[in-house]
Length: 97
Image 1 (tube, one colour):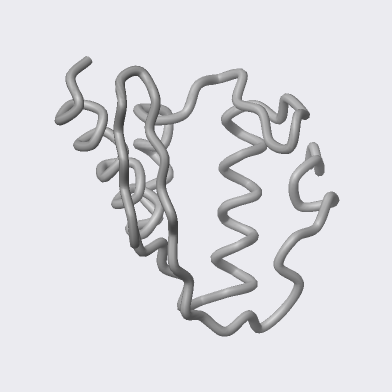
Image 2 (cartoon, one colour):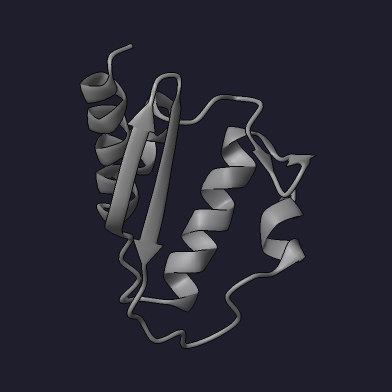
């Protein structure tokens, strides 16, 4: 992948999150996705994100800085939002229901 390809892919991922386009999340996140060192899978990652947007209705991922050096990408994200409830909950991440 070129620098532009990686940058475009990451911007697409952020757009997917901001649009809450969960049906296309698998284009950007693998089935064996890990979060904080734990494999939670794509469905667990989706549930976590859905919980985040439920707890923070005005959540937006804003790219403040984006650097790509194939095969890596690094970003600084800026958040200006107001949570209405719990932001991070292990029950939300790992609940199998």
